[in-house]
Length: 225
Image 1 (cartoon, rainbow, N blue to C red):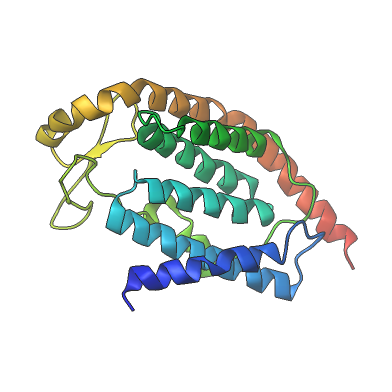
Image 2 (cartoon, rainbow, N blue to C red):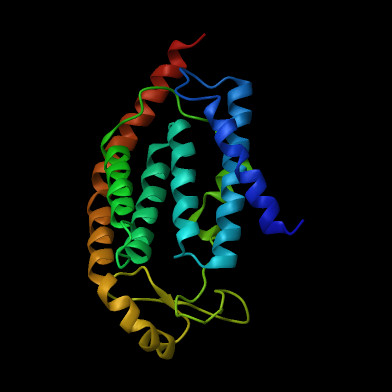
């Protein structure tokens, strides 16, 4: 079975693994194992989707959404908000120009993003296993040139991708690729840039909430025998 198909099959297990552990008061050994395993499958699917379809594809949008849902079950709000924000930016690229009702998908992702961003988990957070923590690092993502028809991968054969100076979301391997893709990207750039600015402006509030989260976690651990 090809690696990507195997990852898809494993990814379908994440709903069962995380579904058994919805809203736990705390994470015992069994729950910790199940959720780390669900995150492991979800991350593998995301990285292979990035490699096979590109980081701005609809399948990556779905993968980021799924990962955010598991991270929320694990009470890891900061990482949840990041992955849901990425899903929102991808949705603006993929769905906004479609006329089949896909804009409703963007609205749904926006509501989820706002909910995650403004809500603080009220229970103990999951202890991540080392390989899962490493997999969640943004440096572990596979990035390809966003120009249509270009398959250059960052870090392969000396390829270095440059960000769009306006939205900092699209990445290109050369000025020629950026110019060729601009007619497709032009209509999305301002909206994606607005989301990126919103995420950046929200960082201070997220840091404040992270401090509250850590204080709450210390209190929980102190109370548990």
